[in-house]
Amino acid sequence: MEKQNTVVLLITLVILITAATTTVKSEDESKTKLLVKYSHGKKYCDKGWECKGWSIYCCNLTITDYLQTYQFENLFSKRNSPIAHAVGFWDYHSFITAAAVFEPLGFGTTGNKTLKMMEIAAFLGHVGSKTSCGYGAADGGPLAWGLCYNHEMSPSQSYCDDYFKFTYPCTPGAEYYGRGAIPIYWNYNYGAAGEALKVNLLDHPEYIEQNATLAFQAAIWRWMTPIKKSQPSAHDAFIGNWKPSKNDTMEKRIRGFGSTMNILYGEGVCGKGDVDSMNTIISHYLHYLDLLGVGREQAGSYDVLTCAEQVPFNPNKAASS
Ligand SMILES: *[C@@H]1O[C@H](CO)[C@@H](O)[C@H](O)[C@H]1NC(C)=O
Ligand SMILES: *[C@@H]1O[C@H](CO)[C@@H](O)[C@H](O)[C@H]1NC(C)=O
Ligand SMILES: *[C@@H]1O[C@H](CO)[C@@H](O)[C@H](O)[C@H]1NC(C)=O
Ligand SMILES: *[C@@H]1O[C@H](CO)[C@@H](O)[C@H](O)[C@H]1NC(C)=O
Image (tube, rainbow, N blue to C red; front, side):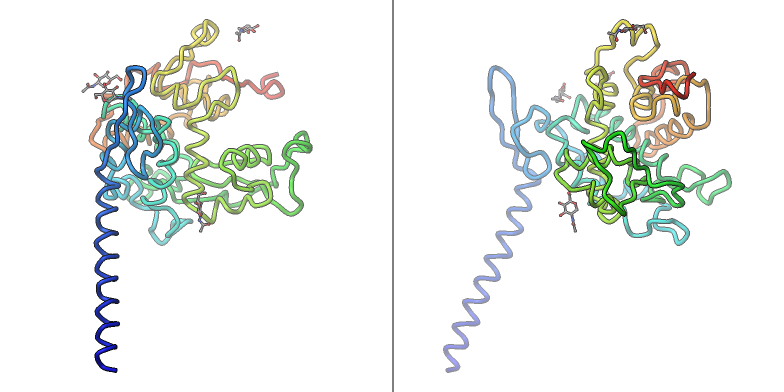
């Protein structure tokens, strides 16, 4: 009887030890193992969970190579202070998990290290400014309060646009107020994001304020995706894949951070001169460049950085008349 117990114990121990070493090994591998292949003279790589699926963008540094937990904490240092409105919600791990899906497409993995870090600073600059509760005299300065919110606090309506009743019909009782890292508003935006991410956001818009990974994913999807065929994605406008048309050039839309604001917010922010709504986004971006050690001097000239003189991509005819 006693001998049997010992045998069982031994076997259990062996299994436990084997399991432990396998786990450690596979974690190590997922960090370091880079698979490489060549096709038509191009190099394609696969880098474990963070950059999975043969892509040219997985061959160089990935986000975890240049953005660590402490840097994320520096950027969003006040988000868990008692007076913040989403205490405990946002974290580094959710951001990396969400970003991993888009890294093989070039998110934070395009160009040299400086450009990669600049794109992350730019994206997070949008996020920080849109989720900030920092005002003039806030403790730590107004730029320390990004990721303070994860949803709109006092929505004045439920953001249901009946025009889309056949494509993205509003679900009775659902509220499509602003939620997320770059907040989503309106049934049609929840519908489109949900379709892309394969999550039923039309019936369950609240998922965005319950799941930080999903909230980051929706924001990165928005950053990576051209919403209209004639327009670039914010990603392409920022990293330089976009070739402005004659009209774009005539209307002062050029590659750079300024155009990302134009794509994401249009006339809400752009073409209005030096307005606060634009400057607060730029300030976050520049602050994050400094905190990440890239330095704001990398951000480029005034016309690259701002959209003060740009004609909005999508002028709202009703509003401009
Ligand atoms: C990989 O890094 C090299 C050297 O920094 C750079 O020239 C190249 O563009 C990068 N590749 C991709 C796909 O970003
Ligand atoms: C990184 O790439 C940018 C353009 O994408 C270039 O201006 C810069 O000089 C490069 N930096 C280094 C260190 O190679
Ligand atoms: C949160 O969202 C992510 C991405 O869609 C998903 O993989 C994960 O299962 C979700 N977590 C929970 C607890 O629902
Ligand atoms: C360029 O702008 C003009 C005038 O606004 C417009 O009629 C034309 O359709 C535009 N062309 C393109 C390719 O967008």
